[in-house]
Structure formats: structure tokens, C-alpha cells
Length: 345
Image 1 (cartoon, helix red, strand yellow):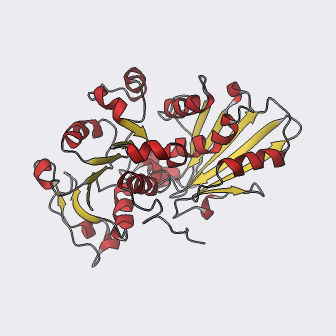
Image 2 (cartoon, rainbow, N blue to C red):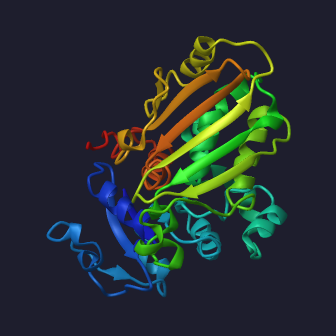
Image 3 (tube, one colour):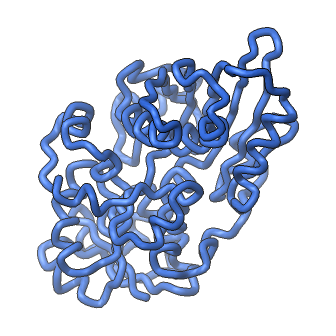
């Protein structure tokens, strides 16, 4: 199957190229970036030198350029994706959108948090939230997959088993997350400049991060009631990796072993979810992979459980998860192209 990528010049686009190059079921057709039109991929991504000799094309002849592509990834910022997706739907393309434009179900909520008008509200019902571990059957039947955000992936998968069990006080959820600097994207600004991030650790977007409504929306579906969370993201001085520490109050007496067993049972058929019985979760163990590691510890003094979850923010938080979704909507083996372990040290 031929596939194309719109917005392939960023970190997630580069990772998509690296993964798809070795995917046995697909052929990379067009790599599209208006900013780098006419340049070879290796000029932007030197790791592709003598490997992938393709030039970036622009978007001016998109319909013609994509006529042979059955599937399209959009690795573009929010607002940009909604400009392309209506036409891609008309052209009968399978779409995996890595932006936030179709993750939320409500136009007003989207516009409140993203501060832009949504111009393709009519496609909201077509979009499937692309978290395979929770929505696999819907994804298989979908044509427009909204790839989840990186923070929401750690939070939702970290909480899904215990929320579904209805064993916690739903009003008690506190999510404290840390991300490597690559999560801010490739474009440099003051906040991500080396001299600003090196030997520095800071919270940002406190009580106002755009991933809050996405997390609340999906947790509310699992809980079958409205969920409101406290979420604080942090920037840590490392390139890639993400770890969330989640605090919730139990509403019944469960032992730590019982809680761990709830998680094991919930994810028993999920290849890319690893429950760490020793509760030790580290970003280095998932770096370069599609795995999410989840640890559970009960604080006996407070009857609270502390959940930790770690991913590679550019992979399970973006590009490998996008390929996992592509595999599902195309009927490929779900792990094709992403079935590799990370690298150590």
C-alpha cells in the first residue's frame, strides 16, 4: 500500500519515515512539506542519507500527488490538519491525524482550549479516538483516526483499569507529568533553547494545558460520568521520554496485589502494555519503542494508589502509535513496523 505524509519535516514526521521505511506492507509515496519543497529528505534528516532518496513536495497539487496513496498521515500542527482533512475524506483516503483537530468531540470545547475556530465540525462524528488498547474495534472500522496526545496516552492508559473498575473516588485524580524537550517540537523558541532547558526543571501551562479536555473526555467515557482532573505538565532536560505520576484515592479497601491484578487482567492481551510488578517505571526502558510501562503502588497510610506510566513521547506518544492505528485500519498485523524493543543505555 502506498502512503504519504503531510508535514513530514518535524520530529514526528521524521520518526514516521524511519518506521515506515522498514514496514513490509507499505511504500512511502509522497513526503509533503511546503517549507522544504524541492529539498531531499537527507538534507533535513541526515540519517536517511543513502537510504531514502525522496524530495519533499508542496501542497499545491495535493489531489494529483496523492492519487496513488491509499493512506495519509498528517503530522501538522492543530488548525492545519482541518484544512486538509475534508478533501482527503472526499478523495477516500484512510487518514491518521497526529494533530489535535479531531480528538475532541465538542466544537466549543476545542475552540475554548485551542483559541481557533474549527472549520470541519461536520467530521467530528467520523473521527475515532486512536487509542488502540481501548478503541481497537472502532479504529478497525474507521477512516479518520485522531491519534492521541502524548500526555493523554500516559494518563488514560495509566488510569483506565482502575476507573473502569469504579474503585476510586473520581474527583481525586491528580496527574503530574514530565516530558522531554522534543515534545515541544522541532522549532526552537526561548522556552526550549538549550541554555534555558539544560540543568533546569519547570512546570508549565499549570491548570491550562490543552491536553486537559482530551484526558477528561476519554476518562469520562470510561467512568460513565463526568471527570474533572488536576493536571500539571513539566519540562525536563532530556531529549525524549515522558513519565506521569498519577494519584487517586481508593473508595474501597483493595490490597496492592489486588490492584495489580486488576491491571494485569485489563491489559492481558495488550502486547505493548507492560505492568511492572516492582512498580519501578523508567523512561529509559521505553525509549525508542512503542511500549508503555505502568507501575502501581498503594500508600497504606492514605488509602491512595500511585500510578506511574512511561512512554517515548515521540513514539507511543505519537509516531509508533500512529502506525499502530494505520495497521488496524488497513487490516495489517497490529505490530508490523513497530514491533521492536527500545535501546539501552
